[in-house]
Length: 572
Picture 1: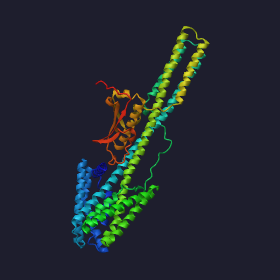
Picture 2: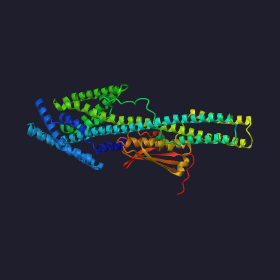
Picture 3: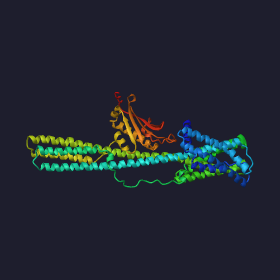
Picture 4: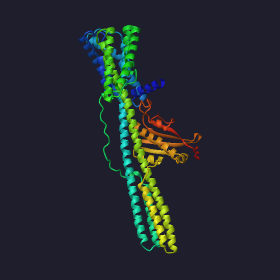
């Protein structure tokens, strides 16, 4: 519970100090909240007086909005988040405290309504309402904005990596075609060789052709993937449909809506009925909120997003209506009794949008991050398999075929080739060429090493890798290499997700004391405010040591990868 409270406080402070607390959305909340819920209703006993009270509240809200415009400009220009947070919080508190006095002056002096001197209750209610609801709006907007930014960065990276995947496909196809062409050329040359008098010079000429083919295949194996033009895409990517309002309503945390309503109603309850009414309001608000939370979840189960939102809105509207019916005999007829019917569904909608912003951001980032990892991994595997197949072909040409040529050339240099010797030479070369062609046509995706993985990511993000000598030796173990590559890939996804700056530093260092490699991926950026809530960081599969955290202006992913044998420490 303590951890949850700390995390919630961190999210709240991030919204307060994020530079966009006062926005058009906070304005959209401020006017109906000021006019419908927090108007000076005590002296309004008739419909005309209610209208006058609401008019006074509207004018007071407009005055405060104009007064807060400089603060809104200032928070976007202040560089220090702590200063921004203090300035914004001070402004909200000052506006909340001053608002009842401003409303009183307008209601009494301008519209002739009766004065209301319940200052402590009015000030406390304003503080609770404005701080709680404006904070929820700011949190919601910032989470939607950060999700949108992360999504665009991930989609842009996915498009780039998809190009790399298409490059890898073309590289594989062109490499296979190159090997097939070289094999066919050597087969024709071999056929011409055995039809002419065979001597040392003719075999040497054929051997030179084998060596040249080996070098061309070797150069293809060393070709930079960026030098390969990507294949044209075969189809259009999936488009994202715009979600409707009801589809954005996700059940908020249990008791959140009830707690906000109870906190906002408590000052009025204490002033109106003392401790007994306060206890009734607290128990009733929290109980009704809990029942509404449970009912909305129950009714929304197995429905689509729009149906779930409709169920939530219906339940909270019914809860507000019941609250108004309960309030009527307690506080009498009047507009104040209608406030539960407005506040319950209103607060629920804001909290539901905030819950959706948190959930949507985590789900979309996780889905796109997984797609980005998978495509990058596929490109690296395909490229790695192609390179290794080319290297094997080059080795066979250089070693087996050219070695056969050297031996046969030495034989014919001493004495003319016999029919049997020539047949054996031809069979050996043709068998080797057939083996080369068979392997090139049956490419297998092989596990990509750290270097191949970093190379595939380079068009997306500028990666610098620092791997000490001991770690290089440990990475020769395929299992260790696979685990390190998984950590690095996740770190690069985080680098894309959390920062517009496309740079990352990969460091792998040996830890001989516990036979492990320490892997870190560091990139400039900022974790989402809710990054520590409910998991969703995508590191669970990397082992218990893996963690993502903020270090100054950098986002760091670190993990410990065990090795079978202690890695020796390199000499300084």
